[in-house]
Image 1 (cartoon, rainbow, N blue to C red):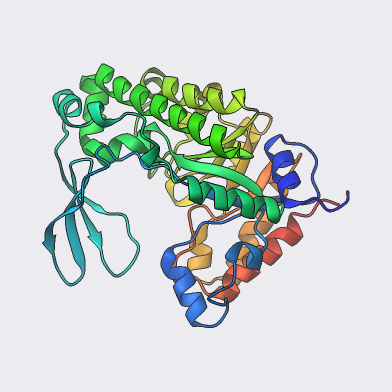
Image 2 (image 1 turned 90 degrees about the vertical axis):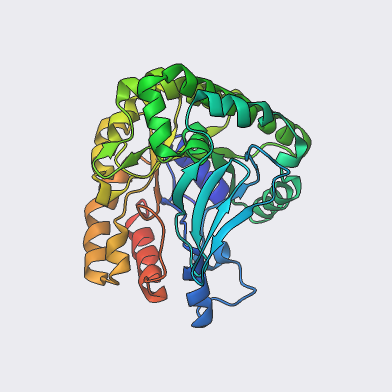
Amino acid sequence: MQTLTSRERIRRILNREPVDRIGLFEHFWGDTFKRWRGEGHIREDEDVNHHFGFDMVNSWCFNLVADLDWKNETIEETDDTILVKDGNGAFLRRHKKHDATPEHVDFTVKDRAGWEAHIKPRLTFDPRRINYQAYRDARKYAADNNLFFSWSGINVFELMHPVCGHEYMLLGMALDPDWVKEMTDTYARLTVALMEDLFAKEGRPDGIWFYEDMGFKERPFMSPDMYREIVQPAHKLTFDYAHSLGLRTIVHSCGYVEPLVPGLVEAGMDCLQVMEVKAGMDPRRIKQQFGDRLALCGGMDVRHLTRNDLPGIRQELEAKIPVVMKGSGYILHSDHSIPDQVNYETYRHFVDLGLRLGTYR
């Protein structure tokens, strides 16, 4: 097969059609690029997508915080951390010196009453929620470089927990499921309304990429039945909207989410991304069970890269790539993101070997 453009390649991969090679994309910690640039591997003005030859570019351009006019209130600050109250009424402690998931300290919203009083009335369409310029610039960059362009953003599960935290959200799913369903429906309808406005004004993307972390180690946050009852209707609403425009949906979900995959497929997910190995996921198993319905992205154990273990990386890639690339439908990516412990040469080896193994002959 002749060499495809990146845009053609990813479109065909998401449709599980023949391609010249597997796709390539990656997520990184911000500190990783700081280190590699400081070491002289990547110039300050150099485009990372071009440097590594990634096939995709994303635009994260929606703001769904409840109170758009709220200015983060500093509650406590040390040399290393800062505790703030944000526009969702959440109290989050963040590290000041490096990228990290914030600590959930407390939440104004802990039940239906808090949601109805503080959040739901504010979740209305407002053009200030959309960064039109960022989307416009990313879409043009992708077009100029023949890259596959995705609108990206978080879906309903990832929109709820910044408001009430995982604990209160999951208690609500068990004790007041109608409240949580109301939250998922509210966020899904607002997301679609914002997409309709953005795409009408700035043009459609090539695909839709949702972030939706629904698992932890060896367990999802909810049972498959709970997923189908409470979350799936909102997912279906957003996935159906994407499909109405002829766009494929990629869903990123960290943790062990395998029990939820059948429900996600029913809702309309077209590609599962990340497949975190240390949580219990295995892309070969997902390929065997769902390869006729799903494209896959990720599933390569980042711990080999973090240890800068070149033999381990080779073993990982040689064991998995021939399986997941069979019949098309695979994009090379780690099983999470690349931290700053990874040497530049290690990641370069991962990419070069992965694409060599992932070229169809």
